[in-house]
Image 1 (cartoon, rainbow, N blue to C red):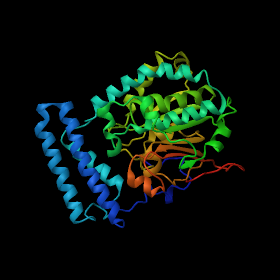
Image 2 (tube, rainbow, N blue to C red):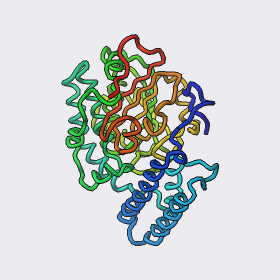
Image 3 (spheres, rainbow, N blue to C red):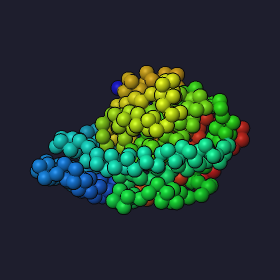
Image 4 (cartoon, helix red, strand yellow):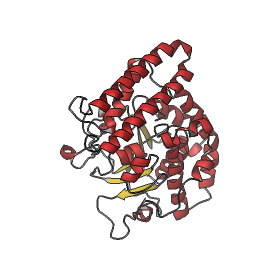
Length: 363
């Protein structure tokens, strides 16, 4: 594990600068969030693992509650005397894995993958009827719509129980201008394609289901059709409803059976799937897998998708190549800190050499 090779200043890289020891209100918010979220996570675990796991599930709940109680009483009690969301993510994951609760959302992910796959062929057919800015704007909006489904945010966790359709999720997308709106500058790069301006793009993917299948895959499929080789970088181990590297491989193979163009591009080595080495919803780019660094040696574009990877962490990370951040804000405090509100969208394009025209429009 080492720094991500495409960071422009790895020595000064900070994954997240939100110090919960200095922000009392945020600390209360996140401790409350993780406490309630863990309770609901264990409900999913009970449903998935069944009665034989009840004792392990109860023990995990008691251990994590004790950890939260300790942090309320002594916030600097974690090793290193620091407290941020990444540490809380790791604490949650450790409590689950210690008691054999490896993937409490496995059933939800499988269900959502199947539902999204049923819609995928129609999604691809619709793209054939579009061109220019209409097509690329639609693709970006699909990423936003898919990214709403997130079992890591309390505001959207109920969507898993409601089985909200992709169309219903898309209706929640706010019209432009978005909170951060660099689409015009990004579109200036995308719309003339082919050829695409990038030879290889590494895409840090987020959630299973509609997020990956109906959001990310149509976008990167179109980029690959324009000549960009795609590296899909996913978590090594389960976390919430994030899609893992093994699940990405399985899903892409299944999609290829219903998409001849995708199958041909896979055969032509236009797609590669690698593990980031991570097992949390955010990502610390100071600790990524050697596999990821080897695959991205010649990449010239980074795409960070999802609130955890593009906003809560790495919002201001600097890269030696062009960077695209795409996310929808699903936590009230994260949204407020970003200067927006719930369901605000972020399309942030940071080229290595900024374009003469265009730029960020921020509400």
